[in-house]
Amino acid sequence: MCFGWWSLRKARKLVLVSGVFFYLCAAATPAYSWGFWGHRYINYNAVFLLPPSMFGFYKQHIGYLTEHAADADMRRYAIKEEAPRHYIDLDQYHKNDSSRIPVQWQDAVNRFSVDSLNAHGIVPWWIMVMHQRLKKAFAEKDMEQVLKLSADIGHYIADAHVPLHASSNHNGQKTDQLGIHAFWESRLPELFAEKQYDLLLGRADYLKEPLPFIWERVYESGAAADTVLGMEKDLSRMFADHERMSFEYRNNRLVRQYSEKYAARYHKQLNGMVERRMRASIYAIASFWYTAWVEAGQPDLPFNTPSN
Image (cartoon, rainbow, N blue to C red; front, side, top):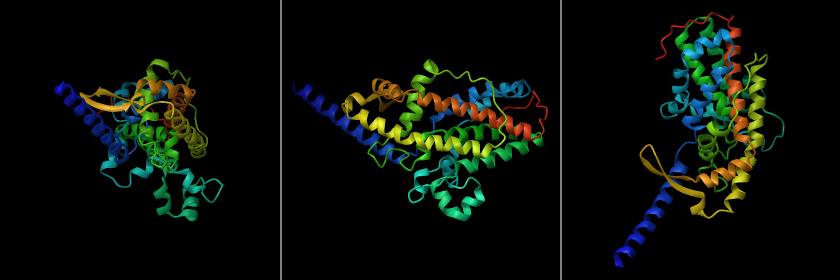
């Protein structure tokens, strides 16, 4: 009897400590978009939208493009300038001004200053920097750089399609929803993408105006941010904490995360949002790859470039 009581106390203490640990991790861990699995899945599927003149080369190196899809997130640990390249806090710009942010970088600098832009994120402009670098690599037929830059630009484009990457409340820290970032963009895709999502999208298109195109995607993300947060907030009131969260083994570690039951309910209420944003990401990435190649003069792509 005493042993059972002691075990119960110990179990309760373990749950409490684990809960505190989860909260601290959620507060301290940077919010990475789509998760490593999601970024790899998106880059992988983008290859299949390319025209025949590009498909052979990209398909040969699909392993590299998949494996290195999350490299940009890893650079956050080493390069302080990296983080703003992954997001833009639209709500911070629109606090006192309902007009849109200047599309062109120099116009935005003239209006807000470089420091202010970096403080609130620069993802649409950084995508264009990467686009120009990829175009140059194609023109110079530097296939190692083509692969590296293709993987990287895929990451940033996918980031621009994540609603919470267009909001300063990027991890629910302002609304007592810590952890929602990884929940929406990592937990939900890992549970449902392979089983439910239709990612057969046809083919990539040439983007006549890639900068306005990516800005529209950013504004789509910003418009969805309140829904991402509001739906989860309302749903959380309908579930007890032990129903919302569960313990599961991941990579031989016991971790606390949103339960499959709660995730399924949230995913259903979002009514296909995650799938739509993933599909849009895949299409945009393939179209940027294709556009850079066309603008570089459509060089022949070899089939024997090392992928490591």
